[in-house]
Amino acid sequence: MGVAPPATITTIVLFLFFCTAVAKLETYSHSYPSFNKSLKEKANSELVFENNATIEKDALQVTPDTGNTAVFGLQNQSGRIMFRKRFKLWDGGDGDINSTVASFTTYFLVNMYPVNNGTTGEGLAFLIAPTLQIPSNSYGQYLGLTNATLDGQSSNGILAVELDTVKQSFDIDNNHIGLNIHSIRSVDSKSLTPKNITLAPGTTPAFHNIWIHYDGVEKILRVYIKDKPEVTSPTPPMPETPIIEYNLDLRRTVNRYSYFGFAASTGDLIELNCVLQWNLTVNYFPGPKSPWMKILLGVGIPVVVAVVALAALLGRYLYKKRLVDRSQSNILSRLRTLPGMPKEFRFRELKKATNNFDEKRKLGQGGYGVVYRGVLPEDNVEVAVKWFSRESLKGEDDFLAELTIINRLRHKHLVRLLGKFFFNSNLPSIVS
Ligand SMILES: *[C@@H]1O[C@H](CO)[C@@H](O)[C@H](O)[C@H]1NC(C)=O
Ligand SMILES: *[C@@H]1O[C@H](CO)[C@@H](O)[C@H](O)[C@H]1NC(C)=O
Ligand SMILES: *[C@@H]1O[C@H](CO)[C@@H](O)[C@H](O)[C@H]1NC(C)=O
Ligand SMILES: *[C@@H]1O[C@H](CO)[C@@H](O)[C@H](O)[C@H]1NC(C)=O
Ligand SMILES: *[C@@H]1O[C@H](CO)[C@@H](O)[C@H](O)[C@H]1NC(C)=O
Ligand SMILES: *[C@@H]1O[C@H](CO)[C@@H](O)[C@H](O)[C@H]1NC(C)=O
Ligand SMILES: *[C@@H]1O[C@H](CO)[C@@H](O)[C@H](O)[C@H]1NC(C)=O
Ligand SMILES: *[C@@H]1O[C@H](CO)[C@@H](O)[C@H](O)[C@H]1NC(C)=O
Image 1: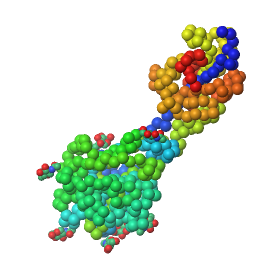
Image 2 (image 1 turned 45 degrees about the vertical axis):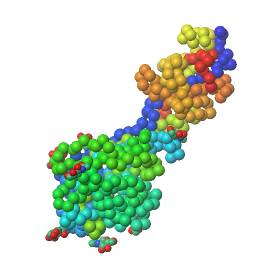
Image 3 (image 1 turned 60 degrees about the vertical axis):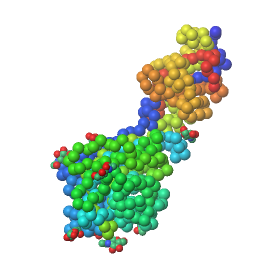
Image 4 (image 1 turned 135 degrees about the horizontal axis):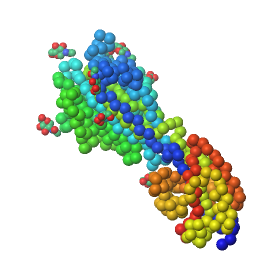
């Protein structure tokens, strides 16, 4: 075989190395083992308090505590205590229904204490909301979540798990846990009475451990509850069976950017709505725009893509020997002189990395070819493999010029040159 004539270059593969990784979710964890004196100040600065909510008596008092009665009446109160950090919960377009959304898990210990001889009102909720502000007149049945005008509007963008101690006409009873979307009318609710759990028992304080898990891959929300006898008792293990299990796509429910926290209210009937411990972990998307989107956009415009690699296929002979005869191969020798091309890959490495160019690994199709997502088995590095088709290139020189430009580009948001490789266009497995 002589000098590779352009006609033999049927296919070329480019590699994009994701130096910042593929839209990796980041994990944020925060834990409040207590809201006692020594931790109160820090918590005060990390949380946002709406209305008369405070930290008192080693607890988040989402509505005022009896210790505040001199200042506040206990009736018709509503409040929120939200974590100041806002989280981005999904990336990309809302239409891509199968893409991953954020996951979160939270644990909290609550004490809802009736101060009025056993009558209770109204309830406490874990809340995901688009803003830190509480609506006005959200006391009574509205639990600090909505009010008479806002209730039921999907623009509320709220998701809440309520611990409700007053039976409204639409409630199952006065001792239930419910899942609320945009409204105080729960989409799912379970009475706690059959489980021997009383949210706000008459005379003795009760301590309820609540766990809420949202899985952004399965898109299922699960809520668990288990009591413990004393505040100092060890935290029991989370029950195996959730009390609420609900299929829910966060993208259809809350805002892309949301806050986490608590809301509560009292009405004519009152109780204390206290949170004594709180753990929150969110697997969220780093904002404002993930590197992944930039890369996807980038690969459509090859000049913008800092790349790698490639090669042309010069024949079964070369492939078998895995040798390149520079004197015979004009294009290969020129490729090798491109600076910053440290590594050559074999076709079968690429094939393995992309699971034989699996359709499911397809990331996109630009003007210059198809891009696949891959993982190099050796070092577990994520790569994008671009299958460059001959038809889109006018000639060998054009291609080399393109690569030289791409290869010189360096930008923190762009993929980096990883390597190049050569393969044989005559291989039957190469179809494009
Ligand atoms: C506050 O709570 C933390 C964590 O439970 C504990 O380590 C610390 O000793 C407590 N401090 C006071 C002053 O109670
Ligand atoms: C705080 O409590 C007082 C006394 O009950 C009440 O008048 C006031 O409206 C409350 N503040 C807010 C912002 O709800
Ligand atoms: C609480 O609100 C209800 C209904 O809005 C009202 O009838 C009642 O008088 C209020 N109670 C107090 C103490 O403000
Ligand atoms: C999403 O996944 C479902 C089930 O796996 C599949 O039937 C559907 O075609 C997918 N939709 C899109 C837009 O990828
Ligand atoms: C609770 O009941 C007792 C006796 O029935 C009464 O003396 C007391 O005032 C009541 N407390 C409240 C807050 O209503
Ligand atoms: C509900 O809250 C919104 C926002 O705070 C407010 O504009 C509206 O007037 C409130 N509605 C009622 C009935 O209070
Ligand atoms: C609830 O408590 C009663 C009486 O203490 C007991 O008989 C019953 O088995 C308990 N039920 C559950 C589900 O624990
Ligand atoms: C809460 O977080 C702390 C710190 O990560 C951890 O030690 C504790 O076990 C967590 N509690 C629960 C109930 O998950």
